[in-house]
Length: 113
Image 1 (tube, rainbow, N blue to C red):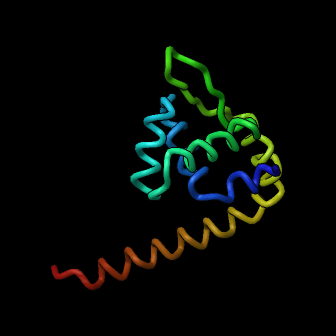
Image 2 (cartoon, rainbow, N blue to C red):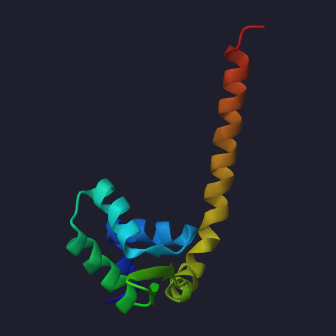
């Protein structure tokens, strides 16, 4: 599966966000994802399997628990691919800075003295 296909799913993106904060037991992932997305333990397990099989997560046993952690290796490939598009970002960021400055000036003008 291509890295963008893996990241195309909001559940898998959320799991990666959780794992970017710290290692988590599969039960902890199930609790958060189940509450947020309303999917079963089996559904979360399938998403964890996709992340493992595609190198985005690593798992290690700890007693009867399975502990997951983020593996950033596949993200480097995505970052490399995005590099060609970064030349367009400064122009957009400069435009955003201009709009922010306009908003500040407008608010300052409208504020009572």
